[in-house]
Length: 409
Ligand code: EZ4
Ligand code: CO
Image (cartoon, rainbow, N blue to C red; front, side, top):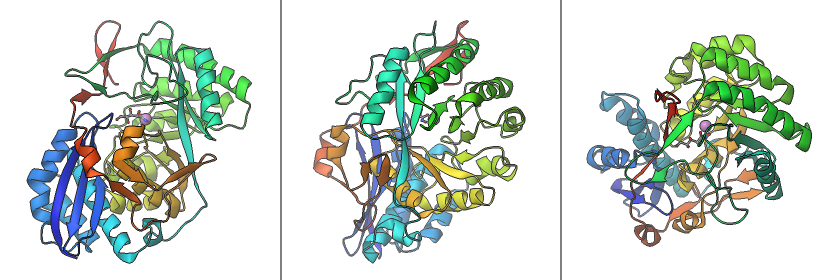
């Protein structure tokens, strides 16, 4: 199974995606997602300029060897650009191996450990009325677990809440990356946020009852002591998890949070290797690992990460926002289905244009995702349709405090 071609495809059917297509001498093709939100072209260049030439002529069957070669031979290790590029190669090789075997990828990973993959959706609102509407809409379309994000009084634009209410039909999902030549500016005040959020969860519990799993994303904005305070304040509302409560480059910060709250903690959508979790997992400072197949080096290292986490009763909760392409999403679903320590899967459905470009076989029914039983990942890229949507410059927003200081977004 010699690799004879590897093509980097950039397309923007509503948002930017980078996909690697690897072709073998027998004419099989495998896909991998290399989308890094707001930095897409750097990964396309890393792949096209430096990785594709190394793939040509290699045996596509040797996935572990190829992963180690790409990781170690660059000398410069880790980092989101490198690891997203390696992810795409690794995922494409697993897609190829499963297609060659005539099996859905999850079979090669050990087979199904469950019937379906519990997914959570994103509800949000500018006020309580909009928020309740959004939660009801998510329940109506089948979600059985819901992330709750709201505006904060006195702040103009807050992470997780679209400027206009999401319509019940169509493309009205929250999409933080905005097209344009400069990133949008948002404002932030942690004290105002901390005062507001517990009351929101109290109201949601009162309206929707005790059973519905509720999640919340702090999006890296708190100090350890602020995160501890929020976790403690949210305990009566029984969250499934509080996500990214601190910017977690400093793993030790979570020790302090953990000492003060029993609200479960999830972290790691911006992490890209197991090393980012070493202290967090070994000291059981978190409950869920948030890494995605797309950003953490592919199926091969993700399997190792979740197996390491399993020894400490830490579960998976893979990132699944719209900047994970349908290829990356399918890869996550095969892994979710196979591993024992699955926790939950984030799921933000893509818009219709994206689904026309990426033909998928995965399904969402009654709150559960399933990768389907086509050989490989079960996603095909319609290159003709993709070519109709050229790359568009887009950036994630950033935040400033009231006095103008840059804050974590
Ligand atoms: O901000 O995917 O949990 N989900 C998130 C996402 C991230 C985007 C960044 O690319 O935090 O909305
Ligand atoms: Co998040």
